[in-house]
Image (cartoon, rainbow, N blue to C red; front, side, top):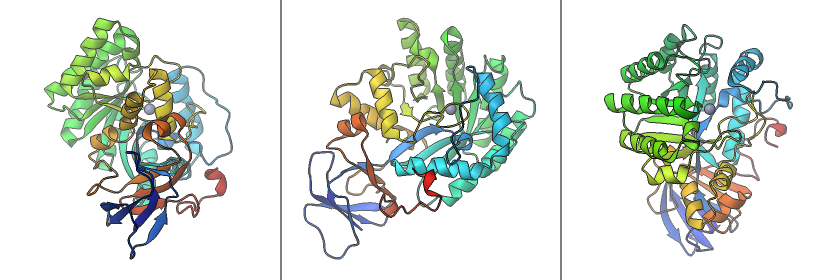
Length: 398
Ligand SMILES: [Zn+2]
C-alpha cells in the first residue's frame, strides 16, 4: 500500500510512504507504480495515538444525552454507577466510545474495567468482547479495577483474581487510605495478587496532601520489594500537584528509582502534577482521557490530541519543544508500557498512523485539527470517507 501526498513531521511535503505487511518499507519523493494507493491529501502523517487510561465500560456514548446525575463526591459517583449502569448493556456503549477514539486517531488503549460485587465480571466480559471485535483496528489492554474498593467490599479480591484468570491484563487499585481506610491491607493484597499472576499494577490515586504522598511512598516501597520496577503506574497522583517543593522532589525521586510511572488526564477540579518537571526527574509520564461522557462526567470526546492540548495548556507548555514532549506522552510512553512496539513514520517501523490537518507536531497538539486516515499495523482501520468501522447508527459517530 502506498500512502501518497504526505506531509512529514520533519517538514517534507508531497512524500509517499510505502507499506509492506505491517511495516514501512520506504519513504519516497516519487510514487511507485504497482501499489494500492491511498491519498493522504497533503495532511501531516503522524504515529497513531495511545490512550493510556480510559473506562470503556462506563461509557454513555451511543445513548441519548443523559444529564449528569451524580453528586460532587467520589462515593456518590460510585453509587450512581451501581444504580444506572446495570440496566445498560456494556458492549454497545463501549463500542460507541471506542469508535470515537479510533476515529480520532488512537489505536492503543488501556481500559480500566469495574470489578465490583455489584457488577461481578459482567463489565469485563463486555469489554473483552469489544476488544475481540476490534482486534483489526486497535490494541486494548484491560485493567481489573476495584471501583468500589477492595477491603471495604468483601468478595472483591476473589473477583479480581477471577478477572485476571479470564483475561484482564493488569490489576487496578483505588485510594487505599480514603476508600478502604486500610492502606496496608489493600496494597499488600494487590501486590501479592499481581505477583501471583505476573501482571502489572495501575492504581487510581485521588488522595490529596500528606495522605496521597504517604500512599505514593507505600506503592514505591512495595514496587521495589516485589521487583516490579517499570510495571507499576499511579493514575492521577493529585497529591503531586500541590506538594511543597521538597516533598514533591522527594516523591519524584522515589517514583523514578522505583520505576513507578504517572498517568494524568488533567482533571479540571484537581491540582495538576507538574508533569514536565516530574518527567525531568525521571518519572515515566503517560496520558489518558479517563472518564468521557459517562456517569462520572459529561466531558470528553475520545480525542487524545485534544487531551494533549488540555494538558499542555494547563502546564503552560508554549514552546514547540514542550509541546513535542506532550505529544510523546500520547504516542510512546503508554504504548511502551503496554509492551506494544511504538509506531513511527520511519523505514522499518510498525505502520500505525493518523493523518492530521496540520503543518507540524506542535500545531497538531495546539489546534488538534481534523483527523483523516487511520492505519493500524499496515491496514486502513478508519477513513473518514468510507467509514470502515461505521456499522453502528450514524448518531454514534457524530
Ligand atoms: Zn480512571
